[in-house]
Length: 45
Length: 523
Image (cartoon, rainbow over all chains, first blue to last red; front, top):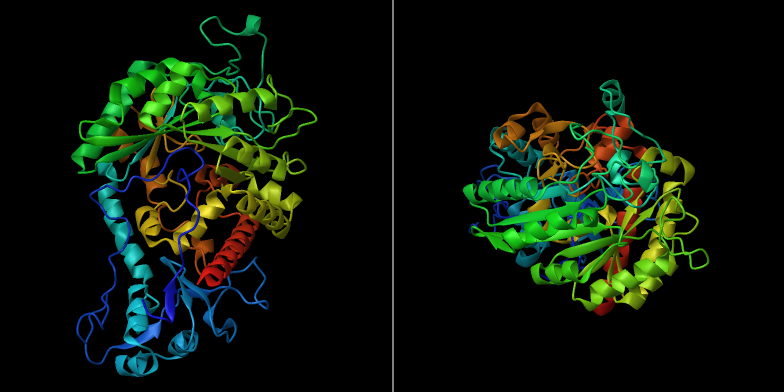
């Protein structure tokens, strides 16, 4: 990671993802997030 | 993503936001726009995708410049080192000129529309083991969210809506088949809040169907919440589920949670919970040592010292606990650090703080900035004594700084009622959540659940809450609170509550600011 763009450190953990006692399961065969963008630097440009 | 070629120019995403400056403190409106001020370093994030970063050096100025006019890759490389640029592209801070990342969300929504009826998105069960309860609390889920009260009344069900949610009756007035303290006047045939306990057979069929669904979809985990009413009044079904399915069944891992008032516990339950890793949330709004009160609604049938003793039993038995506390008009005057001290003394490291579900009423009585001040004072106190305060508000903050968390819950953000969760009433009727009003179907036909117009209605509210969220710095990380609470308050799951929005923007700003300061101090 460069010196000018830094990720923030992790914050305190939590036991469950919502107030009604359920937490996320992430193993669906359908990705709910968009694909990562193509970085022009990484693609050799 | 737009195809790249030699002529592609890049601009700063319209969704990049930064920590608000001192001149940008009107939280009733979206803020944090890049041009708000010329600062040497700050926290930035993407309002759709999270991806918070500390940006410093030349980066803030370059991002501002590329927001005004797109730059070539060569221009950018002359201004910033490759590592910085790579991360800015990876985090979608820099995008091809003219590209709108909302297209990616729209694409996911199109996929969702075509996949929703398969049940592929369901990953959580909320088993309403009984609607009976031995407490009478303000803010209870069981009767607090029902916008269908009129319909239920016209169908002949004697419903008790409003601020007095539960009614304790003498045992002599309660039907012989029901447990002590059962208050529900509904019939066993009512879809919502039926008057019965969930049988082991109904629970077993539900979990088996959900496991089969997850397996068929190639997933290997399922989250199950024991809910109510007061779930421990139906200990028989809890133990049946745990002993039948354990932590893994047919190749699917099972994670359990229970939300309870903490009044009833025994060694058999503790032992089974420890064996299966059941996480327990005990609802304690505040602690008033002078009266022994601890829940909104005033005196209960037990006092705080009883609950405290039960918590200590859970802890001694190796059960992972957190407390659940509601900050509302009913708890406002008593809510604060005493509860945090009690948690710390009991070795509990998390208090899940629900800020009043009745947002419109609450924020009319308490200004959003006053709520934030009270919450953050408690948060800071918790940090000092080792108790993490969390809630919807904290989870939105976590989605901003934790890319994996964002990717895992981008669709539902903080409210899984939008297609991720099924809530099963004791008689097998199915809802999106205990807090939502429209019935999805019954466990007798799972396929009919997912193809129902009601499931489609909730499930397609993923990603985008409603038109008022467009342009908000939290549009990709905030659910606007509970979908059921919004539905109850406005009649629509897509209409936000303005006071809630102002409060959320401010509290998340405060959390980001504290986190950035802490990070800088340890750098």
